[in-house]
Amino acid sequence: MKFESDRILFVGDMAGALVFAMEGANTAINWDLDLLGMMVLAFATALGGGLVRDLLIGDVPPMCLRKWRYAAVAFSGAAIIFFLHHLVTKIPPNLILVLDTAGLSLFAIAGTEKALLHNMHPFIAVLLGTVTAVGGGTIRDLFLARVPRVLVTDVYATAALVGAVVMVLGRKVRLSPALAALCGGAVCFLLRVISVWQHWNLPKVSSH
Image 1 (cartoon, rainbow, N blue to C red):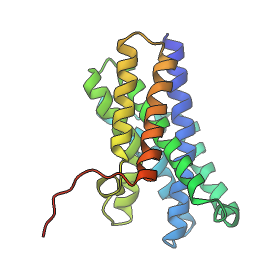
Image 2 (cartoon, helix red, strand yellow; image 1 turned 90 degrees about the vertical axis):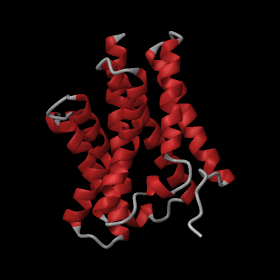
Image 3 (cartoon, rainbow, N blue to C red; image 1 turned 30 degrees about the horizontal axis):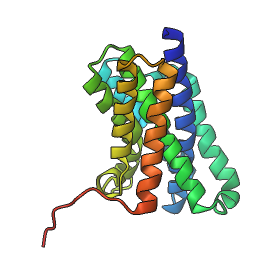
Image 4 (cartoon, rainbow, N blue to C red; image 1 turned 60 degrees about the vertical axis):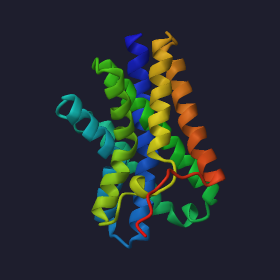
């Protein structure tokens, strides 16, 4: 069981980091940043959420600073965008949405899994799973001096939150770690995609 949980955490972290690093690098290009700015934004987007999670758990130094593979994956994602940006611009928006949502789902389950491995209360595990999923994007937006997308966009953090809840509930009813993670990731993915398709948004209070 421990080995299976560790594998879920590793795969989720690595795959999510690659996807979000590429997204961060692409954002850097759109904001006309130089190569250093691209690398910084890619690193922050890919690993910021996991870094905050590990600090809150007390797993220090954070995993992304202890294991060279994390930084290597983040910088590799940035390099892919740097050298192949002319191809990336041709990717259909719907595919970009799918990739972004896949990264969100992977980080949500990885963050929840790590919190559970550290014997966090299930409620806290859900919150840490959400932080892992949206933390990197929030740090990216703060670097760009804009309101974090997670606070103003359609169902995004909510999808990660619901996916983490489903994963925890799956573990509570004694599903295997892999199956619980699959269910949580699938719910997060579907909720995010459907919300974009149906233009769902959380309610707001009008200031007028």
